[in-house]
Image (cartoon, rainbow, N blue to C red; front, side):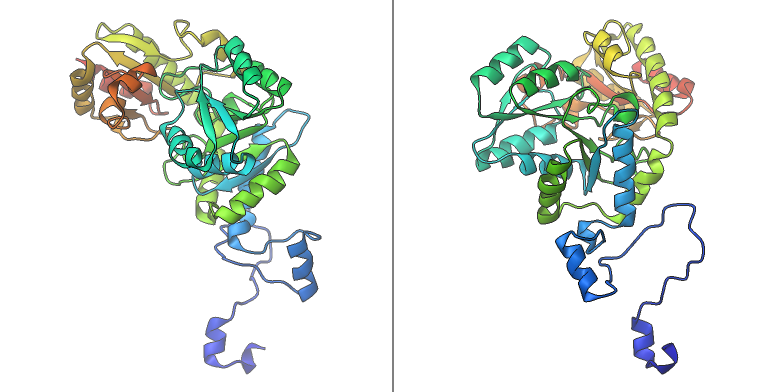
Length: 398
């Protein structure tokens, strides 16, 4: 047919894919739409009678394969299946699960020490829409049950464990059991732990959210998020509909980067955990350090809980310097090997001083009420040689 086409037409038309054997690695499907063989196939795909891709915003083979792998990781070793959808960011995923499952008049029971973006979403976006957040210490199961009993308008319990940046942990199994007794949905932000360290769905949670930007990708080169759930009807009708209509979809490039990152997830999380334990123990013995927040240390109040519901303790920790704000700023300026960056979960060590960086706009009393003191330093411990990490930190402390 090409011999009969004009030059402009030949330039513009797609050729049949020149593929004879299956690619070993997942390709990047950089296409905005998909072709149908016949009008009837198009009708059947649009009606859901036949599986097929339609439009890039609704997914493509790269995105869907990445989502399927994450769903398998979150349900690994269990007797149930899970489904996942990828979003354009962790915040888009959190927005998708909250807007997809809640309506005006509903309330969310949550904790005060969750990610600041999640708190901002609840107060600045959801509250004006009539969806209110109720805050409590989710580690207090008795208090949680009292609140659920007295507030029938609460439809969801939203928790983050381990929490940012004090690493406080919530008992997922206990909170899920109480919540389900009162017919409430449970959503867990599993970004810090990943399914390698913790599987909230296996502990009773209904939905899991991730900023895949962090540990799942692990290399700091993509922004994406995910929602994973056991309830197929809710996932395919509510979460999917919200994703499709709000347009917070992931793209093929970021999905592909995440897919490749997950190939080394287990190896990386083991090394993150090993290095973080050594850093935490070294800091705990330093005379300029007031306190170390690492769930692998038996001094952490949630250490025993973390041992029960997690495979290992992960790469996140924080510690308090005795000198307060000025000591924190001085420490950051002396670092030479570790990186000052407002993110986490990369292969290299990333350090943040919340009081002068991520939480600089938050009132001091609000910060301190959630354990974010002037001298608090957060470390996302990387997988480098731990000796290099320690030399830099110890030099900065001195």
